[in-house]
Length: 50
Image (tube, rainbow, N blue to C red; front, side, top):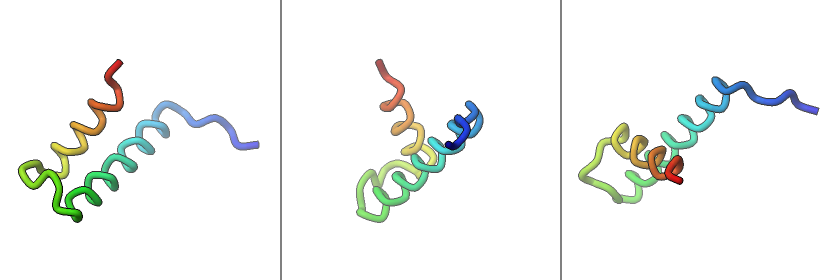
């Protein structure tokens, strides 16, 4: 059984996943007006809204 991820590991995982998602969206020609970093921020904001 794997040990549970630390909060730091979770943060890096989510950031990496968000970055790759943003890169794929940009490759598809979406969100042309946003930079990769801005798109990551939007993705993370959307994921954390309650």
